[in-house]
Image (cartoon, rainbow, N blue to C red; front, side):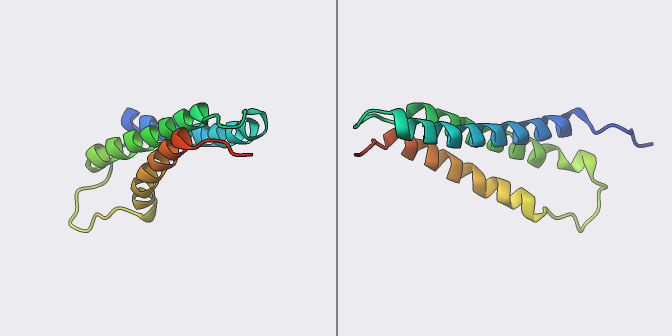
Length: 109
């Protein structure tokens, strides 16, 4: 008998992905704010930190789903991951790399 509510691990995956979106949007907003207010030669630390947090949230959500997806799906031989799963694993290193680049980046004139 299936429950009407999704399991707790699936809710945590959803929460991690939503947090990663929030951190990414916040990072973009902070980048534009710092672009106009930061002094010449300043680094985009806050923007980079939020982008790195977004990458870590994506990694956590994808890792939880990787470990627990067999609990949710019926056990059969033709189980495959969808494109969104692969997109999450591609987004993880890209978010981390962009966060590191933001931290290293200096503002020019």
